[in-house]
Length: 99
Image (cartoon, rainbow, N blue to C red; front, top):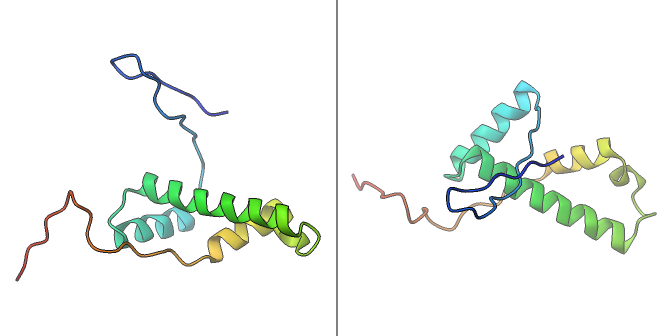
């Protein structure tokens, strides 16, 4: 279950979920995050959002068309097989040093 904390001013923070990943998947996630100049947490959030969106789309459009996607293993395999989307330019908070 997700836990929710409060900030110092009393506003609720976003829910937090703890996930245990195999070492190889964690390494892949870290590499993807570095390629896109994101934190590992943010990269995981982006991939989860995309995976859930695709999963819901599959459920609403044709649930019988691909029964492998409805299983947890099929969903995980499909999520891991997706190519990450590249950022358009560097994030604003980083300054690029020109050679």
